[in-house]
Length: 262
Image (cartoon, rainbow, N blue to C red):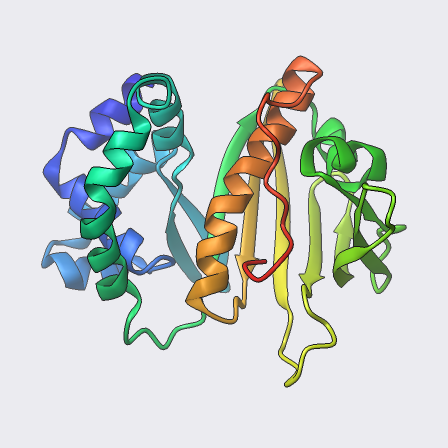
């Protein structure tokens, strides 16, 4: 956590995080243009943010896209804010946040993408099993993810309340155990007019006894869904992490990726 506080102590790095909050997935060139700084200086700041886990890089061809990763800040919030006076703090910031969110999202024409990174003390195969085993997903997600996980196969996000209802469907685009899983994500496949499904990529990278799990959710249809999954993925992945590291899920009910925001 010391590296997070060190990274946040510099005003330029805080500005970089603000830029990524307003428009995630920027290239180094785009960030340099906004700050009016030399590439070398911006690169050094991004390296510090990357080492602290506050920024993650996703490659797209020759480009390196930079994404804000809120996980370390979420851990700070859980440690020092959640147990104290969170409701009052939320009320005080509600009006300001509403104005900032409107300014941040209005006029944007880019297709939203969400990236989240978490570190889990487990093996890559354990994380892969947690992503693809229906019984395990039912425990930490509140839904059973059902498929044979072969490329081209269908998958379903089934409720575990006995109804058998399916809230999300999709197709397996790529399956490379235990490192990479790509699926389409269709919450309303019968909706009119039909829309192109979003795509979720799970990237599992292991180092000794730690796994870095990167979840990239692309081709989101609108800012409403971006807002929903921005709240949902951290909760789902925190539950997954807790299950693998402690054998049990977190006390609060897991957020379920269904309904209008998923």
